[in-house]
Structure formats: structure tokens, C-alpha cells
Image (cartoon, rainbow, N blue to C red; front, side):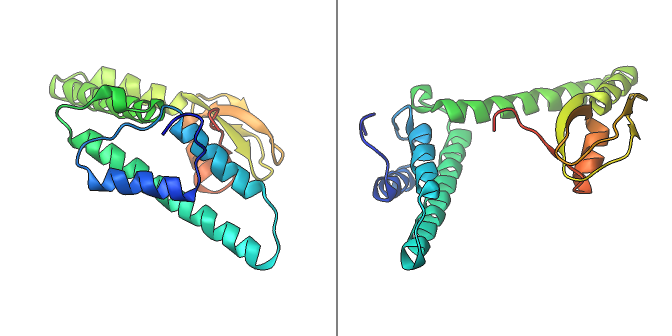
Length: 185
């Protein structure tokens, strides 16, 4: 598929079908996910009435399901492959694999510290994680809070953005008071 080819529901279906029928990772054009995001984004922007609106919604649902299926199939192939053709990996897939690699490193670090009796290191790691700052957007008004780092934060109004300790953010997120802001969005 050349870069000038636009993605539509038929070409997406064809790519997913090809990927499911072959045990090896197939080569896909480098801008595939970007083009796919453009296709779905443009589809979402279109406004129709009646049956045409239902068709559009069904196409979006199909494209979403096919996209999810494709990503999961490709990642499954990547995880099971011993002789992976790295050139066939798209940048977005490399981004996912990078986070998996970091997770493996963290597991090894915790395992090593635990079996080597490095309790102070584990305590320090846990404390650093609790007080690590993340960005959240408030969904409800919230009074001042005392953070895990013993600093005061707030008060906050709905839609305020703040950087607060991870432990506090998780508590607010679990109560639907705030949501994590991802800079990639």
C-alpha cells in the first residue's frame, strides 16, 4: 500500500484479513496508523441524518473493531516471534514495545532488590512512586488536599488542571473526581 493510497473500510478489512491469514508479521506502510486515524477522524466529523447517520456510526464501529483486532494480532505475533523482522514494526508498535521493555526492567529491579535484601531501596522506590507527580484534570470541585509529599494542593474547581502526587491522583481518579491528563492525547 503506497503512501498515496487512502484508507477506507475495505482496505482496512483487507489488511486485517491478510494479517490474520499469515503467521509472520506483514509489512504495512509506515504511516498506516496516522492515515487510519485521519480516516476515522474524518468519518466522525461528518454529519448525517437518519439512515446515513446509522451507516456512518456502523462504519466507525467496524473501523474501531478492525483497528483493535489488527493491533492485538500484530502485538501477539511480535511477542511470540523469535526472529522478528524489526523493519516491519511501525513506530506506534515500537512505542508499545518500549513500555513493555520498561515493565520487564522494573520487574527485574524489584525482584533483584527483594531477593538481595535491599529493603531500604524498596522503601525509597515506593516512596518516590507515591510522591511522583502526575497531571490531572478535575471533574468536580475539590477542597484543599494534603499530598503524599505532605504539601498542600488546591482547592480546585471543575476543569482545573494540576500536578499532584501519584497516590493522591489515583485516589481522586478512582472516585471520579479527577482524570489523568495524557500529554500524547
